[in-house]
Image (cartoon, rainbow, N blue to C red; front, side):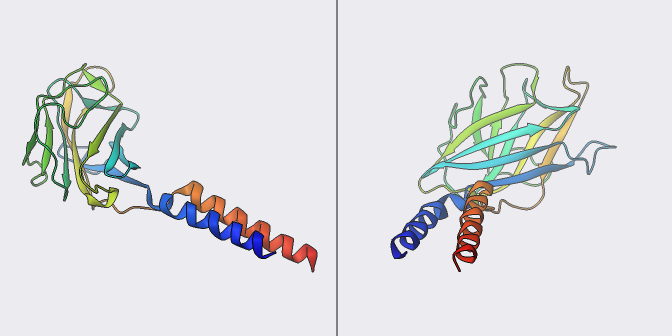
Length: 191
């Protein structure tokens, strides 16, 4: 019995580091009339490894992110290396990672300026790395968006409200809950 309890505690200890891996922010504040508090998309932050965070921007149906000359802006307390194509974005290039980007909703620490790689996209994914970087080091995000998925007749900026707060990983919580329920029911059946 003690060996099983020790095994369960060991499994829980292994699951704990993964419990704070993801955060999802809403891009719901815009500077476009008629869309001022509309959900344009989401920003998903995922801790890939020590010091590396994957950022995925996903547009809601009816919207896209502007690639031709667009921007992705974010705040972080980490010191990033500024320069061309650092961080890396698969299939998309940008002119520079600059400090203090455009300020439609206040200043941003970093701006991936002048994106290129097409007209627009419904998903943009990139990695950000720095010493001891975590999801909690990120603040607000901003992005250049288009109304519609083809062409870019109406454009604007969308930003997140609030800052990134890591939430527990759903699968880790589900797994520990199932282990707890299994132990509870096993104990009731044996007594």
